[in-house]
Image (cartoon, rainbow, N blue to C red; front, side):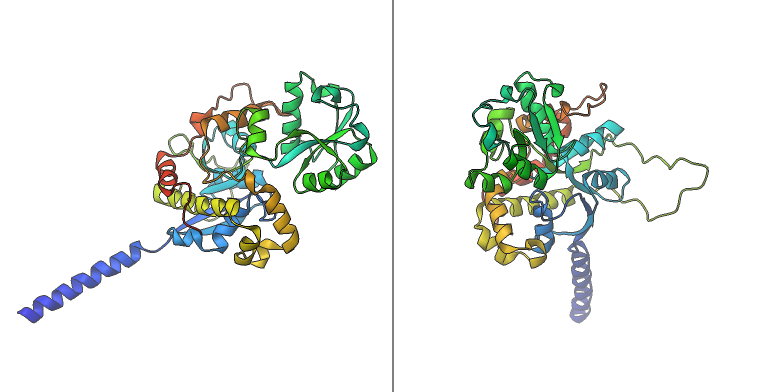
Length: 366
């Protein structure tokens, strides 16, 4: 009798352990990423995957590399991914403007790590933004963050866009044009800002490189790159493709991530972002794979110049969301007049916010 009961107990215990093992299996999660690790705003996701931080939090993340931020947003909209790492601008245009509401799961940056610089030849005549009237100003490209920031500071100086000759040149051509005096000013990103200032080849007119400077100019943080999810209660079903021919059969749509998976993703990202913002760049390089680092000297220089811009544990604030939306609304391509979206609409799920609070200001190193 005793042996029989012991055998039965063993079978029961084995079943419990087997069930526990099944439950302990990492939750699969597909994440569409709209930028490479070379762009530091996207580095936290790539680093969390490479360091095994996602796995340590209990999720198995498959990174779906998208061509650009818009494609990453489309992947979530088409249910090819559960999370999109994209720009906040694309989250609005590719989500909310298409009747597909999203929530900001995590903010990656709180400052764009850029500055409006004045060319050496224009230092004596351009002392404020209002002095750019009738002058040529360079931007990285139309619709870029640099373009949005320029539009914002021009509005603050009561200048209309047509009162400034905006030139879309790209980074290298913009830097060259500043040196030759072909343009009076330009919005330039790091690490070029630091390099130009150290070589005395430009002067700062408006600084966006740190959260403090950004808040002084914009009234709050600026969340350029964010991780977003479909807002479960409001997301409409995916519409079938239009056309006479039947849609091509593909893989089954991905179900929206469950709350525990979202919490695990946010925790992993928080741990990595705080580490990137506080650890010595040389120590970070030692732990990251060479495929993410590339040229070590250049990586360390970029990280040192930009790491203050990381949004800590990733919790977006109402003030930051409002300031970011204010900049985006005033972009060169207006939003639909009927679009109504505010900080409360974009706020992360309460469980995610609570998980970040529980991690504290110094979460475990990834």
